[in-house]
Structures are given as structure tokens and as C-alpha cells.
Image (cartoon, rainbow, N blue to C red):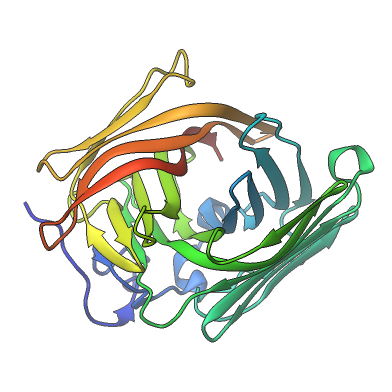
Length: 341
């Protein structure tokens, strides 16, 4: 059965809090209503929301994020040195997410977190997104400062999915890849200028009612082809994918939708190559990891473990018009995540 593309605007949920139209879209056409998703107190604790930004430079990957997962809210920042594998990070947790008001619309609404020396600002304006983070306590007190503006012209497409869970919940997710980045970063004494011809940003915007036990695989790439075009990949799976999965090739801001993609990796050694293949012969890529980030959270009812491997993708992908895209040394990561939340 073919995947369903959503092409008209409307509400995300029906009167019972279920997805009205599972599928995928090139823009966030469906309106998320957190009140309609909540209802009973138990269901409100199942509501998981986050804005996750990543920024790629030739040498570093940086992330600044804010999340509210019902029991707790949090902000976190981390840096991956792509050459050495050094990965300082810090998370600040707020019980019950007090004071964190997550925007219901990914196209508007600012999000700010401040606490325990960490301030994260995620702001949306016409044609751009601004990511700012200041953490005086980062990496033993050496400090972190991020000030990045990510360009997102109106024609730049997203990969948006509305996915049901067997439990009756849902996940409404938007991925933006290959956003030209301008600004500056300071990691300790290291100063890095962000230029759009070498640096790219990405967004993972998620809202949903999740089952307590959840597992998923996600891979993302953001870089440049030899001819200068911006190229990205978004690959992954969770939930019921009969209507659509989130797999796509992104070229200069246009989404080339892919069908089901299988991930082949060794969970006993995540540093081994990961291979991703689709079932229509349009994708065959391999991630060669050079660094691994392991993040574990144990906060009473919330537990999670993620193995996120950074490296470069190589292989091939077939664009919608039939062009074969040769992928060589495209920066990216792949992760397996197990959550009890």
C-alpha cells in the first residue's frame, strides 16, 4: 500500500484525541491542539513535546534543545568534536516542567528556558530561526555560547509525519534539514564562526502522546555535494508506518520522499558501520562512525538510553526525477533510542 501524502490543512486530532489523517506532508499542515491531546491526567503525562536543534560545522556538531515530557521538563546542550570524539554536555531538569510553555505551532512562538546557569532561547521569525544558548557551567566551567541564525525560506520543505501508536496515541513530527547557518559559537576558549557555505542547521520538532515503553531508530545527514548543492537525509522508524514513514532525501530544500527503509546495525557494537536500504532500490547508504555519544537518563519513572553515532555517509540515493545522487563523506549521525517515559 502506498504512503498517504497530506495536502490540505486541518486539525491534527479528532474529537476523541486520535489522529484524523495519518500520513506525511511537505509542510506542517495539521494544527496540533495540546488540550485535545491531553484529557485525563494520565494522558497528560503521556504527552511528550520537544524542540531539538542541531548545528553542523566542519569540525563540530552542537545541539540546544528544550523538552516537556509530562513528568519533567528539561533543557540540554551538547557538543560533539567530530575529530576527537570528545562530547561534553549538560542537562538541567525541572520537575513537572514548571514554567515551560511549549508552542503548539512549529511556525511561530518562542521558547525560552533558564535555570542553574543555563539559558536556551529558540526563536522563530519569518524566514529564519534563531538558536541561542549560554551555559557558564558547561564542561567544568569553561563555558558555552551559541548564537546561530538558521535561514529557512518559505520554499524550503519539511518532512512531516503524523504517526499513530498501537496504544492509541500518536506522534506528530517535523524534520527540517540543511538550513544555512550564520553566527558564532564559543566552546571554552575555542571560537568558531558559522558561515552558510560550510555550516548547516537542523530541527526535530515533536509533539505526541506516547506509550510508556518506546524504541526508535533515527538517522540524519546534513552537508554539501561536490557541485555545491545542500544535501540531507532523514531516515527512521517508530509507531505504525502503514500510512507513512519519515524517510527522505533532501536536495536544496526540496523533499524527495522515500518509502520504507531498513536499518542494519550491530547493537553489540554501535561503532560498526550502519547500512540503510529501502525496498524500492532508491537508497543504499552506509554510515561510517567515527565517534559515539551515549546518553542515559534515570529520573524515577523516566529512563532512557541513546547510542548516537557520528560519522560520514557514503552510497547512493535516487531523486524523484531519476537522478542518481552519489553520496561521499556526507556528515551525519544514526541513533538507537530506548525510552521508558
